[in-house]
Length: 262
Image (cartoon, rainbow, N blue to C red; front, side, top):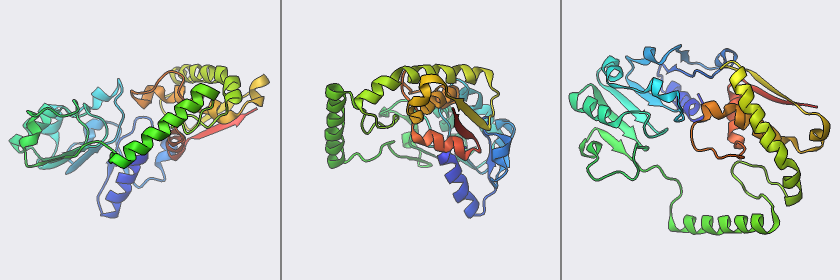
């Protein structure tokens, strides 16, 4: 139940829907404030009239893949939404389930293969709504983004300054050079901790000592959290990157705490 899943649940409850939720990483303490019906396994989520997924594509995701037996167990006339990652739902099986009448309809904006081929079978089904997975893609927006990226890259290459990065706090060149070794160390410590800690966690305490206490703690804490969340964060992260501020928000929204202690 990350940010998007939580927002979807809030709106569903406002319309009087009974919401069933499943999240193997959400702590039991964090579940209490939520007005949701929590499931211990995805297999109990069948029989609903609407099924929507909000999860990253990880090694564990195929366990929860709505395979043909899963579609068959759902209530006839169910509607399926996937705005998370392409491949979470098997598109061929979804097409067969719609044609058989088991699934009444689907809404997708992510696909196993993008751009979609012309012979994509779901295109021909009137029960399916498909939209492209894109943000501000106007000509003006693309031009402005290109200029901003070029300026940021130039600033980094000429001066070593990190500016307007989506997953790293703004740092001047001198500070970045000092903190970089601690970023690598923090990420490795986070990966190690993820292997030793239980799946559900309510608090993460990062203890600083020695010269590390003189460094800006925010980027180092992000590096630790990035390594810690990597096992559940899905694909797409690059070595040395730190998590976005949104990951801190989602971690905290789940009832968890990230504390720095010197």
